[in-house]
Amino acid sequence: MSISIEEVSETLAMVSEQNLDVRTITMGVNTLGCADRDVNVMARKVYDRLTTAAEHLVGVATDLEREYGIPIVNKRISVTPMALLANATDATDLTPLAVALDDAAKAVGVDFVGGFSALVHKGMGDADRRLIDSIPQALATTERVCSSVNVASLRAGINMDAVLKMAQVIRTTAELTADTDCYGAVKLVVFSNMVEDSPFMAGAVHGTGEGDEVINVGVSGPGVMAAALRQLPPEASMQTVAEMIKGTAFKITRIGELMAREASRRLGAQMGIVDLSLAPTPAIGDSVAEILEIIGVGKCGGPGTTAALAMLNDAVKKGGVMASSSVGGLSGAFIPVSEDAGMISAARAGSLSIEKLEAMTCVCSVGLDMIAVPGDTTVEALAGLIADEMAIGVINNKTTAVRVIPAIGHKAGDTLHFGGLMGTAPVMPMNTFAGTTFAHRGGRMPAPLNSLKN
Image 1 (cartoon, rainbow, N blue to C red):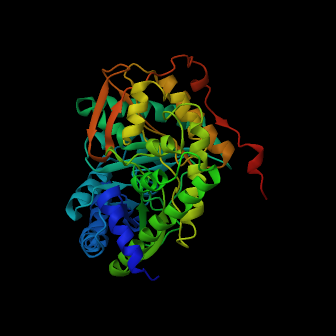
Image 2 (image 1 turned 180 degrees about the vertical axis):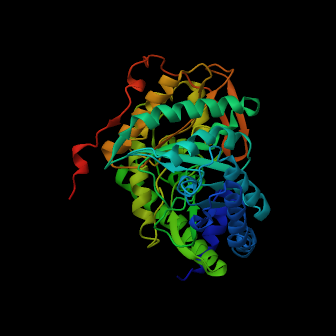
Image 3 (image 1 turned 30 degrees about the horizontal axis):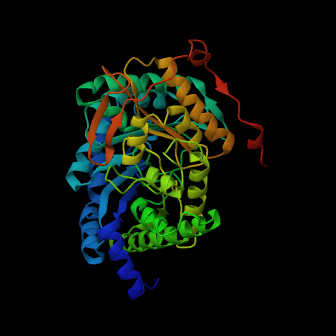
């Protein structure tokens, strides 16, 4: 892939003026060979595996930053879902595995490690249950470990027993970390149709169909996209706006493709995917909400927001797939409330509600992300919120997720502070009319008719 002088100059302007960055280089590591009957021996094997495989990850990423002048914000590791390894042991408490992941992350210098995870969309085995029961303590006692649980899929439907259990786990995790603004829940996400090659946290895992070591790169660039769209006059047609988005997404993705190729070559790992998602940060000018407002929505969350987001998401994908033969992960536009200055502003102004966010998740990447709700929100209400979002994913055959933070001791209008990329979360009002029956019916909500594709 050749890069022209003009592209280099344009890229430098994107970096210096428009917050362009590579959001993450994530090394996926196969840890299935670490399984052992003794959980402490298994934890030691996991630590050794990661510190060997990812020993040079941060150094290579730092070299690439220096050589190409493009910031790489996060260096991360994803591992085989730990519930699969847990089948080898009968240990009830699997926290030692999380501690090993955390220690390994610190030893090699990565920001996060994902994969304290389970896939229970059709049923929950004993190892899955032990892993899920260990999540609150695991996330409360570690700094860099992230956890994800897949509870629904197009082919299986929705595991309602798992939905209720995860609602309880989310609340318990928030309670155990209440002294740090419930930060444990920030590292926990519930999925439908979870992908196995995403480089983004908290949902990154190393899928069983992957190689032993794989490099996945997540690019970003909301600031670049916003700067490009500002060049258009207000009378520009929607086709013109879409073309500008496609062209800009192409440029952003080419940078990710270059970084992924170079990182995998230098690390001797397989190149995986480039995730071309527009991932915002709390920095002013690096906001997906701002892009929607530039397109013409008066305030993010107002009428027209879902349509504008649908066009943005689609055009980003169309532009990105022309720049890389390895587009994967989630790819599109993220709408995490606490990580986007424009979303925070819209939530505080009252233009953006949880119900509107849910509608927006029908047309964008992932789902209800980084949303703080009042501390007295019931488990049944949390379960209903998760079930609603899982239904959107299942019916539409797309990945959706819920990363919700019960703000223990706080009410609507208060604010949680997480720092860094996690940002600041305004506590949003939550619909309290969940009832007590729906969440406790249990069983599995059947797969929809469109799952019958053979």
